[in-house]
Image (tube, rainbow, N blue to C red; front, top):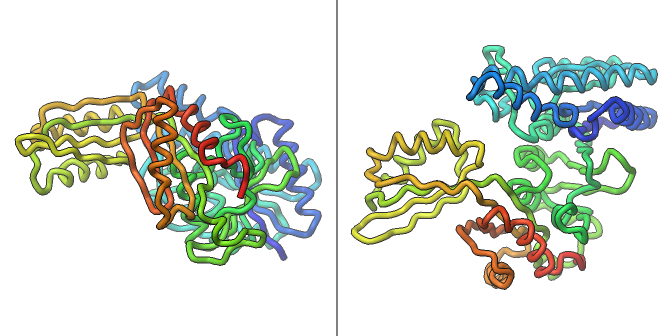
Length: 414
């Protein structure tokens, strides 16, 4: 019997009518004889509203209490969806992340799953029920509730699909798949029918609408992930195969693979610069080890050697982590021997991604020329084998996306 894991985002369950729409969609799948486990996000802007509520009573809410508060949003939507399914005549049961066997570490706010015990979900499936699971959450060994970070319901869904050995994980959202760029920014952006895990991971890590950790799990456990709209039956995007796996059906010849697949962007980027640090071995470790221990996620790093054997170290963090990161760096400044800490909170990143860029010259220079001709200054640059990212001013990032999409002719297709 086919087993599918569905995931529905916050816009798909934003109100009662949309929850009923999701219930009818699941019912249609059940009518084909397939089993369904549905993972849901909180309704609409519930998570944002809960965060605002927390900050209205505490300047810096304690992470454990904040996670427990935020977990309630998914509990509301999963119970309502189970009720809606029962109202349509389909046996269903709602489970919290803990009840569904999601075990995590203790990193509140962005916990990582270390185990999924699927026994309870399997039991309910054997009894003929549709299982509705609260996404975005799990529980530690000490039975404390944790959340998985923004987009964490994607990770819940793929983790469950892997543990249950599901045939496919289907992610339903408010767009019809993965596009060459955000269609709200680039109206001529094309839907990508198929994409491999590596390219999707880079796009997701730098702004595309999927949780990067979900893609990592999908690649590791070889779970096919299908991304589509919950509001239409239009074909979506299939994410599948490993880094050296076969090309999908319909994928064109190898020369057509030498291309940029998509443009991703991220806002809310902040830069921290530590000035005039002595240029000696161990300085970078002395800076970044404490930041890692404090749970600060560092992205782009640039070190510039100056005069008199000193160096400036610049790095980027998410703007939401800027205050915490600055506190950590200020506490280290004397030990590091630096002179000051400077910040720039108004940045963003724009990236070109494509596996065809490997061992093919010219993509970086072309990207830089497109941005230069658009009068967009590049602050920092970082690369991988299949990605080039530039840090720019946030006020210019959407124009950068449009310029790069046109400059690489992504509207034309392969």
